[in-house]
Length: 370
Image 1 (cartoon, rainbow, N blue to C red):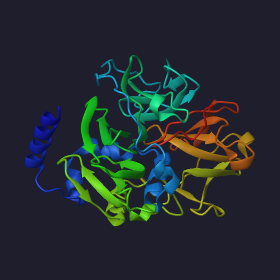
Image 2 (cartoon, rainbow, N blue to C red; image 1 turned 135 degrees about the vertical axis):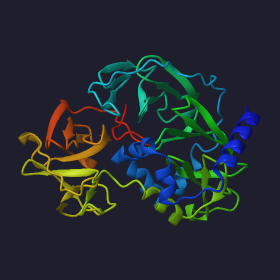
Image 3 (tube, helix red, strand yellow; image 1 turned 60 degrees about the vertical axis):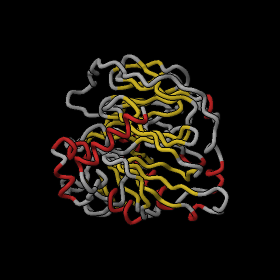
């Protein structure tokens, strides 16, 4: 398998030449990749921020060197097509409660209470059995019908905001799974190094910070690295490199101006309309649709006046899903779920009640699971 992977990567490297990160190269990928880049889940910006500012050293010490049991072989999931609940939708509305996963108009019963949901253009990954014990977890992928187990006993599970990459830590290896290829496309040995959180998959590359456990005393002692998917090259990178690459995919909604890269992932309801929050939690600010440059004008039902809501999923270029925050300490987003349409300027409630929803995200769900 490793020999085949090396041969594949060598062929890709010979075909691709030296990697070039300029915009004209991105355009050369074609209209399909450009359209996929626009399908951004705003909740994914949390992972980018986390990579920039680092994580606590306590997190570095937990779970990085877990003993990983031998998992099942990676089998391709069923190729049966999923009919979404709305024609033209690129990513169906997805949320869970316990072991029940709502995926568009389908209801999926997971193998156990779900602890993570990761939605892609061609299916959804479901993590079960985590509950603070990574060695017991299992990861499944489904297009809506058959669930295929693709890994178990893994850590640092992360999905990209765009593209088809799902990445995790398996023992001392970074494993990269491509949902389009329906299999593991790279397994990168850390060679004794350990990882800082998080691993950040983009569309064509994966970033992580690694450090030497014997010499590191804080996160900043680590080295940011970039793994290029087309060449298989693993090279040191800088925060400037990471910011430049992530800024090619602006947020769907931005606070302050259409040119801002401050994502509008949390909103207040003022006069029955969604208003954004400034980056440091200041007064409500206008929200703009970056694709058109126009100000977002979306109304919600009157009963949500004064409430706080968070964006947790983009369904397509016109629709996004939000969750109401429950009152109390931390205002956990566990209230009603709504779907908003930019073109019509309206939001509708799709699920009601204060629940411990499991909501899709790049690194973890927004809601909490018991």
